Image (cartoon, rainbow, N blue to C red; front, side, top):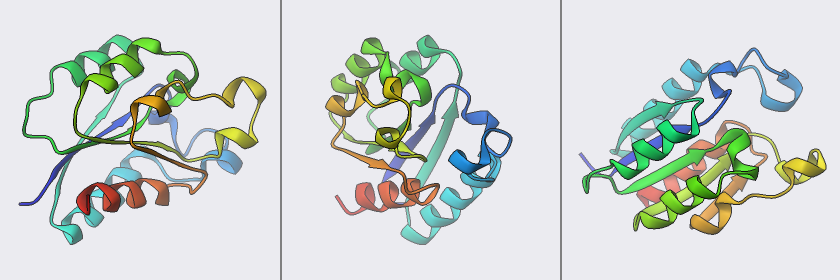
Length: 143
């Protein structure tokens, strides 16, 4: 099979479909993972999913990645705006990395309008709903 891509969803993303549906839509995390898996099968790549609410666990996952991964798609949730440590772990990885947000963080509250993570990624996809994950997946597969 083609490229291997890790999909990381950070704090509170297991609440998709239950949270503010006007901001995040009505997709559950399980539905999102199914949608991404279907697209990965179409593209001929392999995906692995990881969701955690604990910053240190996400960092441990990144730091423990082996060389079999070709890319990372990360929705860091609220850690986007505050986690220098997550930024640093992403920066260490020399594979293609794309930050994804279901909502447009720049159209939201002031405290959400800064991404510390963006500087450690090759690109960011914002405000495209769950389709942002699919776009990021295609970008990594075609890179």
